[in-house]
Length: 334
Image 1 (cartoon, rainbow, N blue to C red):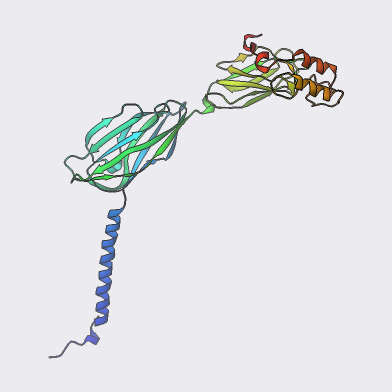
Image 2 (image 1 turned 45 degrees about the horizontal axis):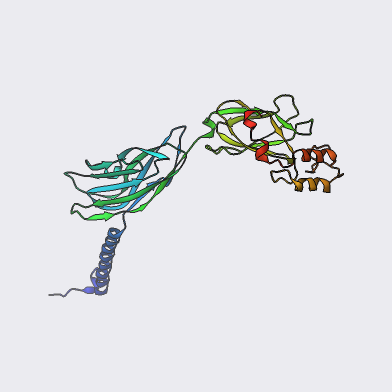
């Protein structure tokens, strides 16, 4: 009887040993890979992380709660917290990850700023994997930014074992589209004490108090009657400021709800140093610059190109006056 010729065998003894070792390593790696995957932390993320609602347009946004690394989920519960002065909860829907779930365990949408949902699967097996757990829809109620915080998120296996998600919160900004906001024209007349020509006074409207659109800028013109005009101004409440060297420059509140013609604004001279009052400091500045020629000198209050007695007389006539006192009755037409 002839013995087995190992030299003609497909595998030599060393080759067979190497094959066994290789297969062992593959099995170990496979088992290790399964263990690593099983140990991955379940996460729940608000998507998009930063959303925007256009209050005066579509005014809704749907956020997704996206889950990852879920293993054997039979039921889940989620609590969201948000700012009810900025956004309002409208509705929810199950995501594709749990589309087979059919048992609502609990739902709570009050108090405002709070949403809670518990849902599960009755008479069916658990789900695993990645995907959208929940869709939530909000509308905007006020300008600002609200967090959308996942205050609680966990799921249960068929055995009752609970797993807590690691969560990533989001936020929603509620804004207005300025192109869709109602707009009006603001006009008026600016007069400059001591000057026959009322042109050249810069008038500013600060960003609006509510919509924060602005600033707007216009220059007074040398025209009879209306000599100041702002067109296409968003209806809002503004602070109106003037900017003219040598004059008391007011800060006045104006609310615009429709086309508005302002009372005449008569700017009073004498505030050479711009501290909102006419006092000895201003008189001293005029005396120090007395006789100086040239345009653009604050002490040349009447703008005639030279600092002289006329400028001193304007300041002396308003001596002791402050900006607040000078324009306190302006909106009453005084």
